[in-house]
Every structure is written in C-alpha cells, then in structure tokens.
Amino acid sequence: MTKSYITTPIYYVNAAPHLGHAHTTVMCDIMTRNRKANGVDTRLSTGCDEHGQKNQESAEKLGMDVMEYLDLRSSEFKKAFDLLDVDYDYFVRTTRPFHKEQVAAMEQKFMDAGLIIEKQYTGIYCKGCEQFKTESDLNDEGRCVDHPNMDVEEIDEKNYFFPLEPFRQRLLDHIEANPDFVQPPKFLSELKNMLAEPLEDLCISRPKSRVSLGVTLPFDEDFVTYVWFDALINYLTNLGWPGNDYQDYWSEVEHVIGKDILKTHGVYWPIILMGMGETLPKRISVHGHWLGSGGVKMSKSLGNVVDPLEIVEKFGADALRYYLARHMRAENDSQISVELIQGAYNGELGNKVGNLLSRAAKFSVDRFDGKIPTKGTLTEEDEAARAIALKAAQGFAEVFALTDIPARTEALVQAADELNNYFTAQAPWKLIKDPETADRAQTVLYVTLDSLRVLLEAFRQIIPTSADKALAILAAPVEEGVWSPELDRLEEGGTFGEVVALFPRVT
Ligand SMILES: [Zn+2]
Image (cartoon, rainbow, N blue to C red; front, top):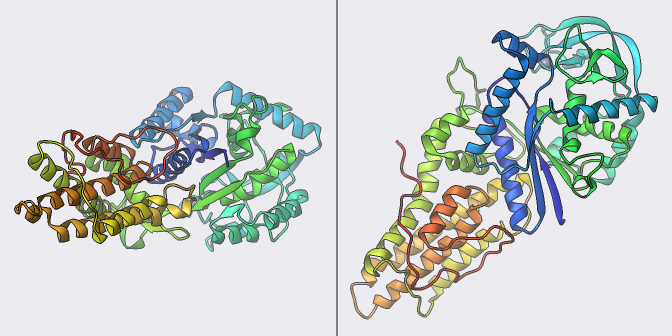
C-alpha cells in the first residue's frame, strides 16, 4: 500500500453532532495518522449529508431558511471535528454544485444504459430511515425496528427504481474472492445474510411533492434523488471523479461505518459502483455502537447521553479520543459514560502516563539543573524496560486495522505501567544520595524518560495534542512524516521544556 483513502460516512445534519459521529470520525483520523506515520500517502474524507426529508423538516421546524440551516449545521460539525483534532482532507457538503452535477450525470448514464425503471409502487415507508420497508424490516407492532417510536406510512406513488437483483451474484462472487471486503468477520456474515435472498429494486427517487431538498433527477424534474443514492457518490466526487486521476486513491478506498449502515454500504453501494463500471471499495470496516454504562441504550430520559463536546470541555479532546480508541470493542457494542471516561482519564492516562513523566522530569530538572540526564552502563533491568517500550510502540510502526486500535492503545498504557514499576523499583531518589550510585540514578532517569518518549511518539497517532505537549517537555519534538520507534533519541544533556501537567486530574 502506498496510497490510501479513508472515509467516514457523511453525517445527517438534522441534529447536532453526537458521540457516534465523534467516534467514527476519530477512528478514521487515528487510522489516517497511523498510515501517514508508516509512509502511506493517505487522504481522509468526512462531511455532511445535507439532503433529504428529515433535514428539510428540521429546518422547517426551526422556521429557518433551508440553506441557512444547512450552513449552520455543517459549521457545527466542522467545529466539532476541529475540536477533536481530526485532520481531514475533505469536508463534504452534498449541496455543493460539483457534487450535484456529478450525481445527475451518473443518473443520466444509468438511465441511458437501461438500468433505471419507472413504476407505480405501493409500500410501507419509514420516514426515519427515508426508506421503503419490507415486512421483515418491521417489528411485531408493525413499526420500523430502527424507529420504533415513529409510525410507518403506506405510500402509493410513481417512482424510479434501480434493480439490484441482476448484480447480486456478482457481489457474492466478489465477496468470496475478497474475504476481507468487510471487516470484522461478524459483519461479513451479516452482509452474506443480506445477500442470501433476492434483492428488491432500490427506489432512487422521491417526488418533489414530498421532498424538495435533493438533487433533481435529470430525466424527470418532478423528482429528487433518494438521499442515499446521492450521498454515497460523495466518496467519489471528493476525489474530483470522474476526472482528476481519482483512481490512485479510489483503488485503495476504505469505508469506515457503524453497523446500522452496513446494508447501504455493503449492498447498495457496491452494486451502484458495478452499475457505473467502477472498482469496488477495497474494504468496509464496521464498528458497533456505544451504549451507556451497564449496557443500556443512551437516551435523554435516562440522562445517560454522553455529549462529545461537553467531554472535550471538561477533560480535553484527548480524554475522549483515548477512551474511544482504548475501550471500543471490535464486534460488539461498547459502554461509555462520563464516569467511565473520567476513570480512564485519571486512572490510565493520568496515573500511568502523565504522572511518570512529571515525576521523572521534575526530579531530573531539580537535580541536574534542568538538563536531561546522561546514561551510563545499562543493566538487565534497564534493557528489559527499554524492550517493553519498544515492543508496545512497534504496534504503531505498521499499518493497523480499525479492530486493532483498542489492543494497541492498551499496550502503550500497559508499557507505561511497567515503566512505573521499573522506576519505583530502581528508586533513583535513593540512588542519588550515595555518591557511589549517583551516576546510576542518571541512567535510570534517562532510561525511564527515553522509553517514555518512545511510547509518546506512538501515542501521537491516538492523542496527538497531549503527546506533542509531552514530547516538548522532553525537548524531543517529532517531525511529521515516516516514523519508526528507536531508542536513545533523547538528547543527553539537552534542556527540558517547561514541565507542565499532561493530564491534570479532574474530579
Ligand atoms: Zn426507520
């Protein structure tokens, strides 16, 4: 892999950014930083889906002009991702003219190729999903499983459809030949189940009498494009598709999604791409959802909703980035609460990483005139401590998958914990009292600080701001670009930066 293109879904702007948006986007940012550090030319795309009935109604409810509403919401998302230190290359808005033109052009091509049919359709429609539903999509009360509090509507109208069934076998063959098309395997199985039965035609239009916010169909101006049929194309239009050498990045695209949109990304999107004659995504990486503490769903009435921006305000962006990275489970839903975040921030980042740095750095500053200590002959214990740090950091010197992130993050904290044990056992504050062992104190301090530096360089992929702040204390800044963990890069006799608290305790 020399190039990579990572995408978040584009987010529906009918509400303010929430934890789910923050999670997917931060994971993509971590994957992007990891690839860049490993020499892969990587682009990250995120943004907002600004079309569809729900967005239109949200603007109406607030009595706002639609464009004004979309500007406001998009800027909120942008601000949230900036606050979370997400270093994106593209921030999509589906209302931009280039995107809309390309969607319409594609639809005209589909029409010309005979891939779109027109028919009168009677079906059950969920406004929450903005999708027609089959009986099997509904619960016992006849409501959408994803929107059990909303009534479904029976709708009878003319629409345009893209028949998916002719492509089903081809998609199954592709999955067979590319078993890591969807990761982790649990979600690949789910996708195969979705493809086990014949597929219904995909309704790609909505009459303007019902929805006006969307891309007008080029062949029937009484209709707008179904919001997903428009939104998915953003992954291509960002790259300047169909011109602009998009292929270099497109052939390496990895979509990161929540499990609730597996069907749109695993079934609809690959088949749309087949219809276009485009390459299928290289990978779709899927994650579960976040539940409140105790595994209960987050809800306003329970008061257990975790607002990402409140967390940033209280603990800083890195507390949230760290928690999401470390405590996400690969195939199942994970738990989160303000208390859990606080516990991880104080107990893991603070006690294990931050404290060790400030103890060792302050001690050195006090005893050695603000200078980084000099190391002498290394003992077995020193070598063992160094090896632990190097091994944990090594996990960041290779390209990892979404599902690797928690274990690799945990390994860094675990290594910091073992460095704490080493530091305590070696007790440099005792060694320094005896002139015969005073040099040995310097070696212990150097080994501690240099090993910590190795961990912090790896931490830059997870919590970039805090890691850089820590490296500034050690006067060991890292340049952007290709990185690999190496010992002894801490400059003996160098001058410490100001020793500030990295993760000040929050109570
Ligand atoms: Zn629904």
